[in-house]
Amino acid sequence: MIITGVLAFTVVTNLNNLGKAARVVALIKSESLGSVSMAELIEGATAGMVESPDDPYSVYLEPEKFQNLEGHIKGTYGGVGLLITVDKDRRLVVVSPFKGTPAQRAGMISGDWILKIGDQETAELDLSEAANMMQGDPGTSVVLTVLRPGESVPREFELIREVIEIPTVQGQMLKGAGSIAYLNISNFTEHTEEELERTLGELQKEKFQGMILDLRSNPGGSLQSAVDVASYFIPEGPVVYIMGKRDTQTLMTRKGRYLNVPLVVLVNGGSASASEIVAGAIKDTGSGILVGENTFGKGLVQTVFPLEGGAAVKLTTAKYLTPAKHDIHEKGISPHEEIILTPEQERDVLMHGPDLERDPQMKKAVEVLREKMK
Picture 1 (cartoon, rainbow, N blue to C red):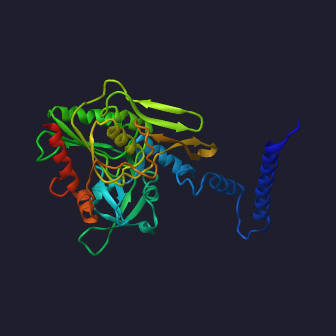
Picture 2: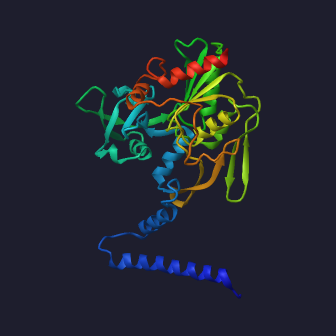
Picture 3: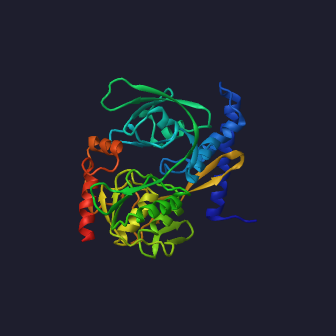
């Protein structure tokens, strides 16, 4: 076989790179003072191949992390039952403990600041790392060091992990707002549409005439779940365009779901990925008004590829565009009505939930929605 030009250069370069990798492995095995197994070397090399400063979303997932990710997508995991976020001061804050979970039974409440998970200070962790540290096998324990706003002495909670089913949808008629329904979606899992249908069924008994959809601090989740949920809030048509390496897919709404009610959507800087797909579709189709703050700006799609031994790689495989072909990556989605909360107001909202008196964004949403309902 005759190999010429660019192809020959590519083959030689690849062989040289493989030779370099083999040389490094040989040096570590023969010269390094530490004892490193071949399996550890291969795992480290695999992680290095996947991870790149230019793409923080492509990662190698060790078996435990892959298991945790699968649990979140399915809506179950081994943990303590806390919904957490990071506030504007980069503190790890409890949004709410889920009902009937170890965290709630131990007395943790909305607004608690988690200072340490075990011996690890949370100031050094991102949200994903903190969540992973609190997860683990049912029956194992974790100690959380917590400071409650208004107190000066931290508390310690030793919690025994259990199998947690993550509720992702909460709904109620909004107090003091007449016939307005309030719907909060905290993230998108395999069960979110089922929860949404059940919650809407209860709300429809109250004969609501307008709806506030709260996607604040929703970090995303399942792409298909986001498309299914968007089907309730926009007319039939495209929800999102997925632009991959080889082709572009158009993901459409599911027929017969559209509620067609006056709608306002609450968003903030914690609204990312799948929640931006929903918010972007609503904005582009004119189906609702966005109130709050500019969203995070994650317009990339990751695909998880399982590997031998229970590990996996998560690779960025596509980017998405909104129905009007907007690329929101690293830009976010701007609301129609911008209302920025102070850190104190943000904590108030986290601690008290939907409250017209304490939540300026909610107050504006009700004001806008009442105009639409006239």
